[in-house]
Structure formats: C-alpha cells, structure tokens
Length: 133
Image: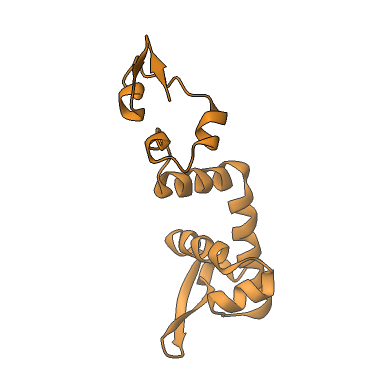
C-alpha cells in the first residue's frame, strides 16, 4: 500500500500530494482489481476533443481537399447521387463522405437536387457553376 512517512495514503489523498502520485505504472496495472488502487482519469480528452483533433488533422494534411475533389469528380462522372452512392463509387467510407458533402454544400459547390426513398435521402448534384469544370 502507498505510504509516506509511515502513514497510509488512499489513492485520492496521494493525488493531492503536490499533484504527483507515488505509484509506478506497474503498481497500477498489478493492482487494477484492488478498488483502492483505481484512480480517476486525469487529463483524458473528451470524445468531442478527439473528434475535433481528428477533423483538424484531416483539414491540415490536405486530405479533406482531396476527398472533396473525389466527390466532385464522382458527381461529374455518375451525375446526381446520394451520399451512399458517392461512397460506393469513390471507395470512401460514408462517415468520410458526409462531412465532405456538408463542406461542399456550405461552399455552394454542390446542391440538393432531389430526395429519394423512405426515410428520405438527399440526392446531390453539382451546382450550376460546377458543371463546367
């Protein structure tokens, strides 16, 4: 058990000592089933923070621009399509296609031209100005 100057410290008391925990990683792993050895996660990123960092990475690396171009090229070849059809044609995953389509819609490079099915799926097409590219 963690001790300092001969006295017992609980995991929570130990964390308050100068912000440093006196346990090694091995002790934490070996004592994982011991309720007193479990410590709260410190400085763990939230799911939103992880998602935002991943989005920023895609944007900074230029992958988002390349993926947007693949969507535009696919619409030029196969014509108006649903997001699922675009995913099938480009080989990109649906969770990649959806944000790229949102960005292209916001930039008025593509537009919703129809809806199909139940539940309704948007059919996307190139904006009037994009047909010439």
